[in-house]
Length: 213
Image 1 (spheres, rainbow, N blue to C red):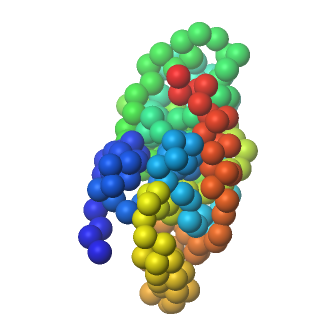
Image 2: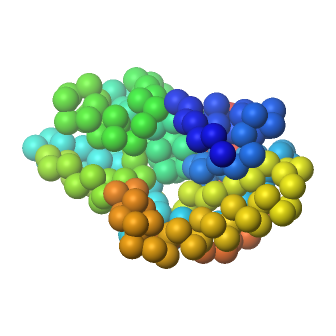
C-alpha cells in the first residue's frame, strides 16, 4: 500500500474522485461533500480525546472577548473545506454585518493558524479543538466555540473492492488497539476509531454549504 499526503482537503478529495486514492482520512466537511457527490463512503470516525468542535482563538494578551470583536480584522482560516476551521465561524458570524471576514486568509493547517495568531499575522483564528488541545500551545485564549460534530473520518472511494476495504478496516482497528497503535494515535488527539453513519457527514455538509458559497 502506498501512503501519500496532500496540502489541502480539496486535493485529497480530488484524489479520491479520480481513483488515484482508495482510502483517505478527511475533514468532516470534506467527507460530507464527497458523500453527497456519491464518490466516497465513510468507514470509521476517529475517536477523539476531546469533543470535536470549532474554536476561535486570540492571543492571551489581546482585549478581544467575543467573536464580534474580530470584525474586519486579519483572521486565519484553516482550509476552504474545513468544518471547524472555516464553515462554523462563517455560520456563527451571520448577522454580524457585511465584510466581517474582509481580511481573512487560509493557512492550510490547524497548527499554522495558531502560529499566525501567536506571530501577529492574524488577530484571531479558527481551529479544531482536538488539535488545539493536543498541541497545547501557550499564549492563546478561546473567545468562541461551536457545537460538537462527528469527528474526521476514514473514507473509501466508491467502487473499492469490498474485500480490500474490509481487510483494511480490520487491520486498522486491530492496529489501533495495540500499544504501538495507541502511541501513534495519541499525538493526533485520537484514542481509536468507531463505526459511524455516512449520512451524519452529509448533514454537516448540507448545513455548512451556505457558508461556503
